[in-house]
Structure formats: C-alpha cells, structure tokens
Length: 259
Ligand SMILES: *Cc1c(COP(=O)(O)O)cnc(C)c1O
Image (cartoon, rainbow, N blue to C red; front, side, top):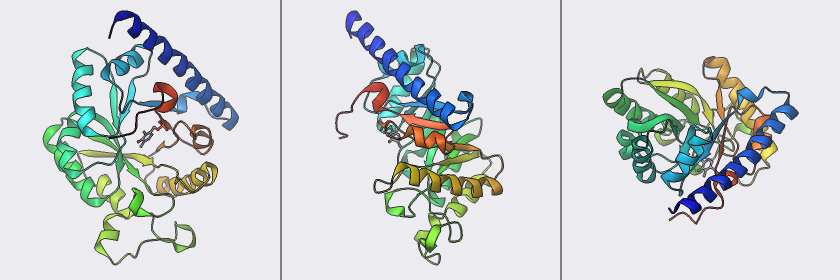
C-alpha cells in the first residue's frame, strides 16, 4: 500500500478503535464492572495482515479469525513482521484443520463437539509445547444445527434438548464436550463462547447465557472466561458478564460478503 493510504488506514482504525474502547468502557461503567475484566478481540477476517499490524501498533494484541485458510497465512505474515499478537480462532472448525490451527492459535473459542475436542487435543499434544486454551461454544437456543454445544435438560429451559440417546446429539452435549476438554492434558478449559441467536433479543440471549455460564462455573470453577458480544450487541454482553468481546465491523468496517 502506498504510504499515504497506509497512514490514512491507520488513522481510520485508530478512530474506530477509540469509539469501540469508549463503548466497552461505558458498558463496564453501566454494569458496575472493572474495565480490566473485558478483553477486546479484534476480528480481522477478510481484512489483510497489514490491518493486524496497525491494530497491534495501536495496542490491540488479541486478534480473531474464523477461517484457517485465511488465518494461517496471515499469522505467518504478522509473525514475520515481528508483531506480538495472540490469535483467537472463533469460527466453525473442521477437524481436518486442527493441525494447522494449533500451530498459531492462542485460544480456540468454537469447540462444540466431543469429536472436535478429541481431534484438537491430539493435534495440540503432537504439535505444541504448551496446552491450548479452549472455550466451549454453547448454543443459547438449544438448536445445534447453528453451531454450539447444547446444555442438558435441567439446565435448559422447558426441556429444549436434543434426545440424549442418539450418538450425534451426545457428541454435541455441552457437559460431554466440557468433560472431554477438561480431561485432555493438551487442552485447557477456560470457559464458554456464544453467539446470540438471530431470532432472540440480545438481552434475552445473554441473560440465558449468564445462567448457563453460572451452572458451568459451579462445575468448573477455573473456567471463568465468557466470549460474547460483537459489534451490534457488545453492551448487553458486557452487562451479562462477557470477558471477551469479538468485534469486527465497528473496528475494520463493513466486510465484503464472505466467499
Ligand atoms: C465475524 C465474527 C465476529 C465479529 O462480528 P462483527 O459483527 O463484525 O463485529 C464475532 N464473532 C464471530 C464468531 C464472527 O464470526
């Protein structure tokens, strides 16, 4: 990029970042929470490595990506430039990509099946020298077709659970996924991640998530992280306990439609 355009991009990102930081700080104040409790993860999907470098130079060191095909080469480019960033994998993860992802990821937010947890654990065991931080992605509305593990009945409202007998459903049970991660030495269970369902209000969704997270922490007291909230709904997410907000559009601009 020519130097002038590059400088302009950096100032644009700095302005957007100032706005997002203000939103986070205001949401923390409104919720009576300490600003230090919330980490901003900049989701740079579809944007180039040069934007990651700008963000790092502006003090954003947590970077989110949702496709390994894009993230892996970006991680190489950013590392070659000497920037210090922690990569967060936030998208649907196919088992044939786990080997690549464990090579650069600091945290995977989107583990939602026993099979994926096992594959990730095996890859981390072979290709890393320290455990990989993992969040279990939870389905707030209990519909596993849209991603996320499903809390068992009892925790769920009005018994909205997939039938437990069936192997597929079992693979996607939150409690089973969490137990698998917790019992895998190469993985470290850190908490939960969720995306608000389209048909729910953000407040309703994150209130439900807070209940699920409270039950989860009773079982796994060290798994205290909660990744929730994006450009449109970071305020209600913070009100209901998010420790990580994943923000793309408000920082980097509208994305071209995903290919
Ligand atoms: C793209 C993406 C985000 C960021 O969304 P914005 O609305 O652009 O802030 C957050 N989380 C996940 C899982 C994403 O795929």
